Length: 262
Ligand SMILES: NC(=O)c1ccc[n+]([C@@H]2O[C@H](COP(=O)([O-])OP(=O)(O)OC[C@H]3O[C@@H](n4cnc5c(N)ncnc54)[C@H](O)[C@@H]3O)[C@@H](O)[C@H]2O)c1
Image 1 (tube, rainbow, N blue to C red):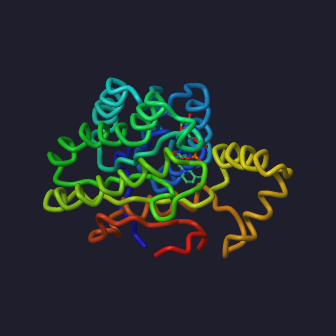
Image 2: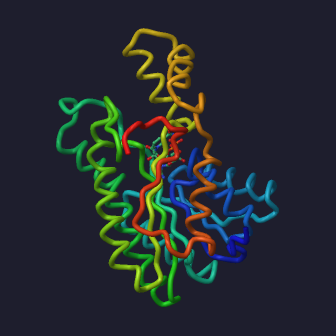
């Protein structure tokens, strides 16, 4: 399938590790011009260099905090300037802290709002004028399987990820006529540092070794294993590619069949 991504400028947020890094690498493989953004400057630089070595298409990178409006403005402007536009925007972020409702005060709620929802609103706001001027573009918002079935002990994720669903569905309808397609990816259990951290906490709560908990969780997933960042990345690439001309406003789980809800 011709994906038509060669030379297309794509910005990937929270791209130094985990799912974001996997997505940046897959776009680089397809020949896109990639800009990677992350708050961890060292990890970011290393990731960009490694992806460059693997793909012979080294991404640009810029460090910054996704919770800061000015950092988002800067990276979107830099992408357009350095890469010659902005065709694809992949919104991704760090996960909010785990915990139950009664462990979080207003400050924690506001921080999670900034990290998981407002950051997406801000990057989309900055990207739209550039995409409109170019006659179209693609936006993918990474969320979580908590959009379909709530996850215990992740009340902040449960509350804000569904907000991204509402934002994406509503906005996809506003943007269709401008040639801008927007979709949501919802990962199940993907083998990253974030999942290792959550597994560690869960194992502690249950008083079992982490490896035992992981084995039980993998067994409960129909395909029998955790997913990889690359498996999320392939969907992101397809949704942004020239092969997708009619899918917008959708949310798609990549979860190996884990979530039984429709
Ligand atoms: N891994 C999973 O199984 C899974 C499942 C569902 C949802 N998710 C969600 O997908 C997203 C990515 O997950 P992951 O597993 O790759 O996480 P990760 O923790 O492995 O990687 C997150 C990346 O985001 C960066 N980051 C964090 N806060 C930032 C900030 N304020 N500004 C800029 N960069 C920042 C980190 O430096 C890191 O590179 C998270 O929101 C996570 O909650 C992950």
